[in-house]
Length: 289
Ligand SMILES: [Zn+2]
Figure 1 (cartoon, rainbow, N blue to C red):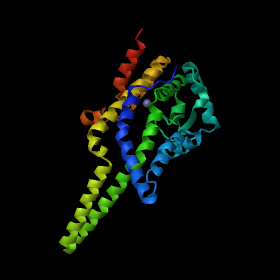
Figure 2: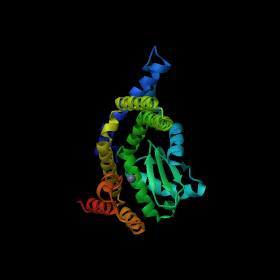
Figure 3: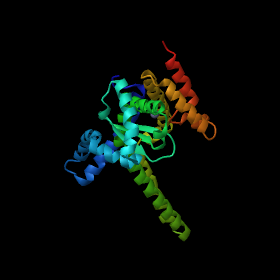
Figure 4: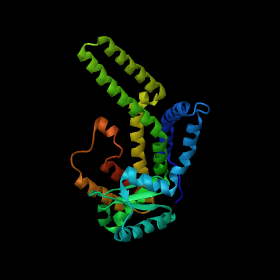
């Protein structure tokens, strides 16, 4: 099975552009402070460095820091390598293109990240081999469809913009506290001056990060794209012959689910479709001639 960028990856790329532009402006601003003679140098180096984030050494650091995963021990590798090799053989991809990781968690789950990361929870290792292969096939689907590397690139490109928002939010909170303190002391003029500083900072923040104004819409689109990515990864697993085993895993999750599936706005912001929707779509894929 060949690697193919799907609609979800394309949507994520388009939605990433406003944050990427803001990050470039943030890096440009940083450059104009640190290197006034060539203010865009830092931004250009940062942009070019995005090619390095897919190097194995960089992905190892990313996997450990962002997902808190670790490399499998000998016994875990013994449980994991055979099903993974089997899935890769069916898909026609080399199994050693990817690195296997373990997440310390009691729930049964798995993830695909970066260009080469595939992780399963410790509990997932106790699944019957066909079901473990099914969730691994789903994760391979994320890699083959471009979801994992686009998310990785999106994370990297959004870091400066998001850090600028966090920093501004922190300064705004401090200004708010100082303003209230001065107000309690009766320095009304100073309180007004601090308030105006906060207002200017807010205007500067929005000018630097206009994507913040789009958040109510982009967060809905990103969630929709994420749900689409899940059904696309399920479809890959079904095409590889793991449809029924994946349905069995989803039914197990349904039995263990606490509380009802999200509804209304929560459903619109959910990153995964409900188990029922996934099962229905998988059944559709399996019964297609
Ligand atoms: Zn998934």
